[in-house]
Length: 235
Length: 100
Image (cartoon, each protein chain N blue to C red):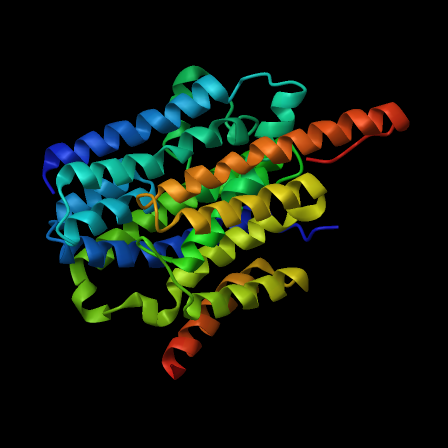
């Protein structure tokens, strides 16, 4: 039913998009007082965009280093939750999985999760992970070096490209009722939480929607097994 | 921001990723656990869409991004290509900002 995009093409496209956002990060990092070396080190080693934006944003608006670290770490915590999501995509011996771990981000987890089987999930994970890694770091360098010329990248609507990406990745999950419940509930929880908790936490709170939605799924699975043998709910 | 803060953030961020992959990635989850964890992608993706569209730091806002997302929703529903969804959303948002 859902439109399947080739994971390699999607990964490169996501990479290019994120690269443009990387330029924004480079510009913002400089304006928050970071050197080019610090901005580029963050993109190479921290490599999780939302955390980097949060850290730089807090420091740029006069927040303490501890507040910056706190917001960034809370945002990065969702990458742990991506473990089970990318499990079938990240294979190989321990050292190899440890190296690949650095590529676990929203985009790679999202693209891996959107694939129908383990093989294309692996392609999707690597394409998005490596694509984003290359373009994010290139973008950061360009933004940090010459950002003053470009000005506000929000003028080009780049900030809306992100949710649009996620929405496209979300669509296949909306085929089942529990998937729709999880998505709607998570979105509602996240928006309601925005004014009350630090930046980054609404996304984690939204993830709690899997508890009621999961109960619904279990209920439907057991009910379907009781009534008809082909109790398949998709996933 | 000092080098200590940046390198600490780098170490913690990497550890959070590696713990997920190594400890949770190969977890053989069954039954109810699969039901719950399998719903993480739609929940996290929807929360990301919501937060990245309707928030400005700790404020709930309705701005040009909502128009971009509306276009994206329509494009996804019409099953248009991924590139059209993403680039279209950016263009619509930029246009609304330019007009406003």
